[in-house]
Image 1 (cartoon, rainbow, N blue to C red):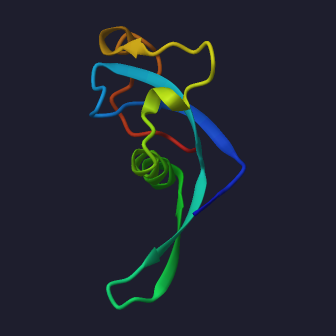
Image 2: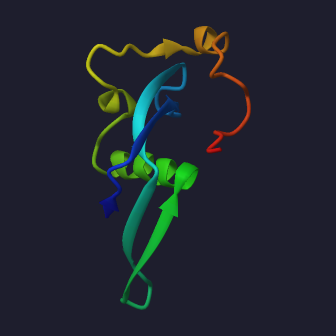
Length: 96
């Protein structure tokens, strides 16, 4: 897997720790190599929200949780508090 250097901070969530949100820097672009059922190696490039999601899931495969990706000193925010912020729009991330 290769990850683009350009990263963005957005609020993240995880079903493992469902009651908090945390600002996590994730790549805007990620390339993943995978082994097909036929045994060949293929690669695919994912961007924006898809790249964030894949990076998040790969973290789980590596044994990392969301809170291990936050910057030092950045505290997780309880969901109820997060819902009162401007970032909590209830809409998908915007990349415009």
